[in-house]
Image (cartoon, rainbow, N blue to C red; front, top):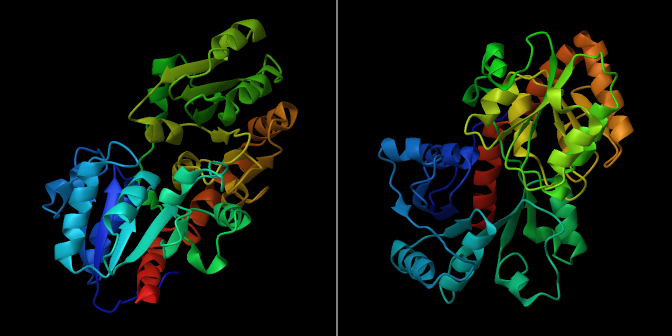
Length: 363
């Protein structure tokens, strides 16, 4: 369990872009713990709308590129007049603009890295942000991301691993009858998957895994997200499983729909720092089947809070799905353990404490 960590007085400039749900909850919690903050963010983001409605002080900043002169001027203006101890950038674009804006200003700089496989030491643009030696600390989304940055030669003392903490109270599963909209029978076991279907996400592997199931096994797949794989429709027609694979396109209610499913599958092929969609499903007690890539093996305990399969192995994935179809008790047990795992290792209070401790360490 997290214990309340009370920081020394400090002032932090938060540069957040469009943000995510954990950040939108983190910022007011920092203020509640006695930290002075200024927040620069895209105030039109759905994550920051509720925060804006509370009157939380924020300034609109929409960064259009990694080098955005207008954004750099805004950030630099705050740093020159605000007497901040720390500036914390929450994504790559925010960090590159922050590093340019903070030149010559005595402030500690924190960046963020949540993905893997995207950096090259021979790419000069990488030194605008993550590889910039003036970045004091880099928050790594997972241990896998931390190890990836170490492999690029970044000093270990600059890398801090903090999971994006979640709270099950943030999510409410849609009622099961909501799945009728997509033609899914009430008695089916439903696999959920939220992913923009780029090749790296491995959706064709999932489609093939469903094809390998016995035709009389009542399993349906609900696939939410933009379809960027032109071969996907052809796969459905050729495999003869179109009737039990349901593509919804982009949905604002994707987390709620996943909560109505019986299990969640993330078949990523490589470089998955940590899946937000999997964490959201786990918050609602939906067990996950994930590929053994990146931070996924940190999130899911194989055989305890879910199942882990080799990436790209459609037969192993099909076997894991069949197990959940044949063993509803196992499925339910894994779902409960999933929620418990979020409440312990991946909880929002732990994220808050570790963030404040990071700030304290820089002072």
